[in-house]
Length: 561
Image 1 (cartoon, rainbow, N blue to C red):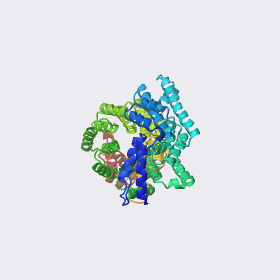
Image 2 (cartoon, rainbow, N blue to C red; image 1 turned 90 degrees about the horizontal axis):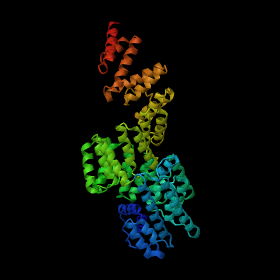
Image 3 (cartoon, rainbow, N blue to C red; image 1 turned 90 degrees about the vertical axis):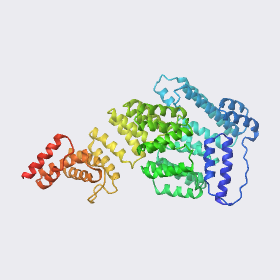
Image 4 (cartoon, rainbow, N blue to C red; image 1 turned 30 degrees about the vertical axis):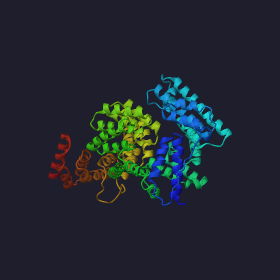
């Protein structure tokens, strides 16, 4: 049996099992993978896997109640079940019922860990909510452990235990349970996503992958582990050859799997290669025009690219497909934000969160809107919710830094910028922000190192390159020159001022290049290089009246000499 045919058989069986267990997102992922799999010439036999055979009739009734969102009724129907899969559906229905009630009892968007943090801080929010949550989730964990004491491990019960530990922020215990689940049943993509959520840094991800390869070499070669590695590289913004190689090998097996195309799009988007990313997503839309997943990320990119007409069309189109999806609300909110209607944008982000409380982009983007409205405290709250859901989102950490910087709390801002930089070390904006904070608190050496890092990223050449022309941002050069002058480093100041002025060719005349021109003219005059001083000063005509007058005085003095 060929690898493609073997994969088709396994994916088909997994899709049936996941659908029967009401794990619909995982079932959707597996069936999309099945649809995207390369054609195999071998004949395919359609068989059906039946779960919970011992409790089959009760299970079928409970599953229908579950599909009708009657979670407590589904759990009650299976109260006397004996099989592991039936116990999973009962406990999963209980868990969803608990989560639904907790959301309704708070503000419609609060998640478990936030309720816990409020209680620790002595909030006046209802403390019984947390007690009920702890008690109910504890009962579920007790039932799972009791089953495993008497029976073999059940992959789906391990998955549920991992979800609960993740909710409680007990990531090491969650990781252990979730990895145990995927070893027993590797095709549950939701379990892999929960496992990724337990890994906070790329270094820890690398350690985890190496341990799996060492202890479980056979499992490390599984196709699902390869998907896991690809998403790890994408989530931690690793634009490396390893990512390209792994995606290419998977594309050979799954040439039509949109999930892989999305991973390529996200890497291009996070790498700020917007034109390439736009082209990729346009192809995805052409192939699957009614797909709303990840369309909110695409709209974020159109917002940054300032493509107002395309974003307007996308907002109308998504509303026609499904007006009550969190992605649609985020797209419409982006459209209102681009028009400067920040209150309307916030309203739609809140609507997105009512539809999906874990909608990460809604929290982050709502924070941006509050910043625009000069409401720093509300912005900080939004960004905190975002990093609580996903601590790997550098935009939320960066937003927290900006909000605290507005409040002149530079040490706090510095901490959050550093968190963002750890996640996105090759983004010059992060290093510039860190440099600005160090400059504000007068730590000049650290500020210079930060701006030099931004300069190195901005240019493909080294900072001290001997090339006559290097295209870099004038603002960074001017900051470096200014700080060097404060430290009395005249040679460094001159070098950075000259580098700043050279950027006029690419960036045009700006405030920084004009100030650099005036400084260089003054420096040339002081060092009796009169022709150079005259040439620099005579072309100065872009700044306030005082600087223009000073430039004219330098030109007159140089001409006289």
